[in-house]
Image (cartoon, rainbow, N blue to C red; front, side, top):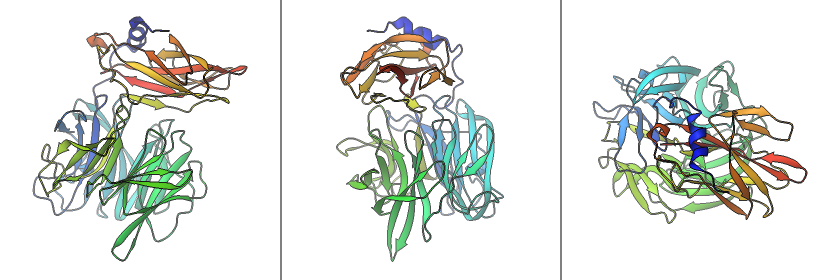
Length: 454
């Protein structure tokens, strides 16, 4: 069944006014920190960039001093970054020297490119160099993160914890980590049940990493991969495997079920950050190519294309004077959220590859993959997400009123066209979707899908 323009218009316009301008849909954010060796005028900070145009990079203004290191000669600034999909707000984790009173995570709400409101969450007092290594979103909107060199009465000196941005509560994930290693990277499974933690260690002059799977509710750290080299960042690829960024410039894919590691020779030495573009399947990587440091797009055949480049051999992003880059996060224009409520058979969203949800894009569509050819369901749209109980074994991840966008049949892949009309007022709106389907004698549902129109 083909959805009409009216369905999407109605669902989007239920939002009322557009969400206040923060990180634009589909754009990326980067974090960087100050180092004593940097030239005068270069500092840490946070920038936003357009991943589809060359050198379109802007620094965020009005940052807390902890995130810039301005006026200091210490390693200090923004070490990890996330973008909240629903509104484009930034979550930034620090690296903090022992002279700082606290190692913090910040929630930054923006007005354009300027911080309008900042909220600070103290993780503990830095011991040596306190650091938030990397962060990831849980399906319920909480932030899971790895950290090290932090003194706190409620947290171990090094480990994994969860931050509730609403209550401000920080809770340690109870586990036992191996000694003689340090935390450095983290990702979370799509269903939010497992944290993957990379820990580094050194033997002579060589670096190695072990990746562990840890239940979010707490439990033993189980080894699931060994990496030759220093794991700088982790993220979850579209196929559910772990994408590993290695300091020597290579990438690796890890099948956590089989523990198989496949090295991808990306050839970007000094690699220190990685993200997955969920519409194209490409990787956004910070590293060095032909002597030029910057952010590069790595395609399916490992071809590299510059996105944001900088002066050779300096590591400084010339476009906005930021320091050592250490994190990339994208505000994905189409992003699953919440858990899946599957029966014996299931539908899953398939958004790669796909056209961008831009105003006037008549080719925009939603894709679904069914595990059974006879599976049938309906796609529902709403203006906002939710988590509502139903009489069936699934929760409604949408806020009524609901719009029936159309029916789908597992073939196993189904496509539902959702053309976006050329109405400027739709820009900045969000639409949420969920598919409810019949399996046996009951109704089940997919996870939610957030669509950001831009």
